[in-house]
Image (cartoon, rainbow, N blue to C red; front, side, top):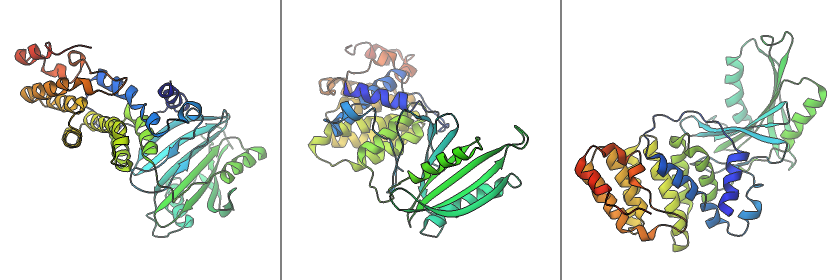
Length: 361
């Protein structure tokens, strides 16, 4: 039931679009579906009491996979999610939402590379290239400072973009606000094509509500939830988040199930994005630390099959099914006869005869 609630939250609150994440190698459609379903149970591991009641309402926390800082994204019936992705080679997570019919808000977290440990440095690093790239279209630019509801000072910029190509004399209103320190920057960009005075006040209210926490230390759950959002369509983006989730987990027996799930997702995301070397290394490391879990061996068999290594695939499949009693509660062993990766070796008659001897659920 709890996993079902989180599934609803991820799929309905974030019916996200994705940017392409590079070449993908199928690791088995059956396995993809299985792991995504089981992976949702990680929320139960971390939040056994609150998940059932709160998961659909809980704000998604935007974090990087490599450093501190967070933006707790807004929730509510008037907020709808549009897209979430990571730009700049996995270094700049971006979430886009819209509020009502006219306002779009983008939330971005990124390293402060401006050389200035302030919100003003973050603003300069972002706004100057935008203005330079839209020469002749930007007007009425104003840089200022505003206080958010917590009394924190944000560096702001407002300007208009000429939309005459759509309608003569029409403009898009843009409002930015930045927080920043020596390590990180947090940004909100609010835009609207409604040029009425009431719209300006609504946009300013969103700036007042913008309260990023640049000292926040992301949790394993924060990383995992973002990894899940990326996993199905952009596995290359998911990998760093699953790896970070594992790194944030205490290495003690109470996290055994959580580590197994996050490891499975990491191995899959690396393999699906074409990094078979990284995928294999992650599975081998997992086997060294947790030799009884069968899906680590099964994932190695998938990597073997992708590389045409029938003898290795057979060995790892046998090792996996020898340990099939150790699957997680609610989990079952995959059917290798329906796995896209294993099917690549179907023409090897000896190998396939072996596959057909493996037990079915």
